[in-house]
Image (cartoon, rainbow, N blue to C red; front, side, top):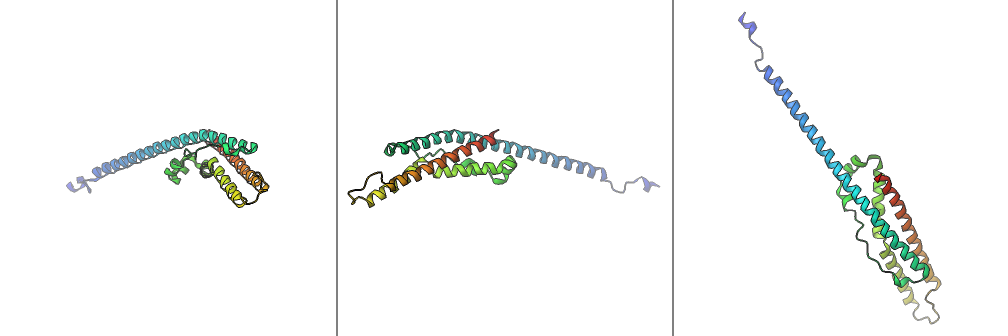
Length: 189
């Protein structure tokens, strides 16, 4: 009868305590990891929102430069334009956040965010400086081709066509800026 009092598995209570400790430990690790991820995603979201606020202000000044350039083309005072290349339009912050994290942050608005940064990239590559430079190159090439013609006037139909095309590009870029600012405001609210 002594055999009935002996436990079959002497370490049973120890294993149960160890199993409960392991479950609690893993739960704490998961909760801490989840918390760190949430904090990291919040920090990245704030970083993108700050970047969008900065781009919104830059787009205002870019819009003013386009309007100035368009006004000079209207007045045919083209040689009075001065500008910079607008290095302020950057994609670094957007590109530094992995796409899966962008989805976790913005979910249904991710496509809007992508469109915003695609527009910013387009505007960076087609800023007032580049449009003006393209016009000047076409105009100079045309003038070189016509330099031997004594009756050629400076504002001929070809030159007016270059001005018209340039103004259409400016107006398209102004429209892109307006649409981009609307999308930025949608994300920021």
